[in-house]
Length: 259
Image (cartoon, rainbow, N blue to C red):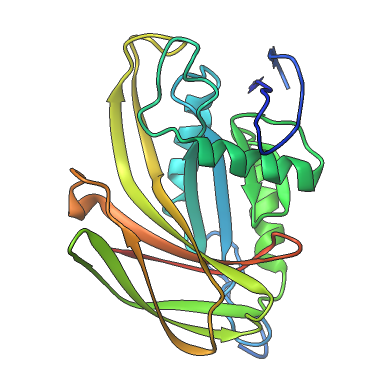
């Protein structure tokens, strides 16, 4: 089941009706889940799963739980983006942001897909219902079967003066890509008071609390930073770096580290 809810965004001129519908050189090593670990050039393969969800959507909790399990898998990075177009329908999601809604609409326009929740995008290329376990498994395997052209490696992260400073190395073909930096709340538990999930306690994993586009990177050592969210327990924070091709939106490299 997916909830599809289309709205007008100033930055993306899309019109629709709200509705609910069912709807290293050599041999590659394998991890315990059967996913390939490295490409022919020796670069680590990574599948980045971006889930667009909302605490106000009754179809989203199964996807949230499923993606929570994927968050523990090798070579898989889960990013949970809470959109804001459900906020007017009974419950204001405390993690929602207009920027995340705009990110979803941008993907939809490029991939030629509808906008709905829960919606999953894998490596910026494949789109599917976020609770469809068989499609997600196939999508992850497809993403990890492709040769990696670049690699990111986080070497150090440190919180100071309200920011997280990150030292990382980049290698491979990074010239046509931009760096995105995401600040994650690893686990968030919320008692939902009203709306479609009223009376339910929801647990969300890898909730994106801040997202920054940091421009291009250079071969070798790099530094970047992102603002902390006030009040977050530093023990419950991770950062994700991911390189995304400027023309195709394909995510070509990524890495994650705890604070």
